[in-house]
Length: 259
Image (cartoon, rainbow, N blue to C red):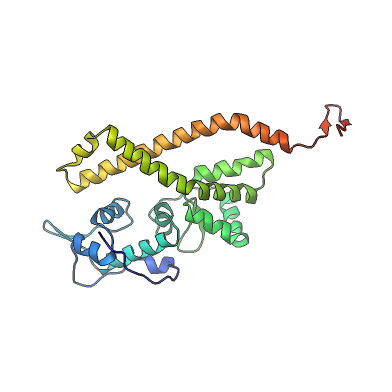
């Protein structure tokens, strides 16, 4: 079992997570894992996501330096602050941003200035991100556009984004449980997934892991969409009707007081 080192609780900034050349001493992946308190598998996963630069190779041997230690320390510190890997990718400039229209970019800048807590929550969930110059960019455009589309039913920008943030807060523990349960169920129903990984290279295993991860995400996404659509057809209409005033407006503009 790997023990996580206790790191300072200070907030990590972008300037603190940029890599600089390390010393001449190198670490194998096992030595690096022990030093930062992270499994070799997670270190390789961060490389696959481009969160961690590749090691320096000397023949068949691969070595990491102190810049890799600093990057992994920063990733762990950001995770403890509540940022997921998608958010960290955006903060480190790994994930490409969506080409947002100027109006949307300006709106996100105002949101950051006027509602910093809301902007921080959306950043923590990986919806938006900050660049090194402090500007805000779109990281996950689909949930952002879905929330902003609520303006068609006269829901303002702040209430829509606040609702999105609260939904993401509520879904996070549910998603943790479902991902674990679905993955475990797939491994139980399809044991060939485990057998196929035996004796393969780390690169092949990482590729299989990424494919399985995306498959689990796709199944859960479509299943939740279907469940939400089925329930929304009934509940949204009922809730809207319950919140309407008792006054009924007729087509000719007259009002009948039912009270």
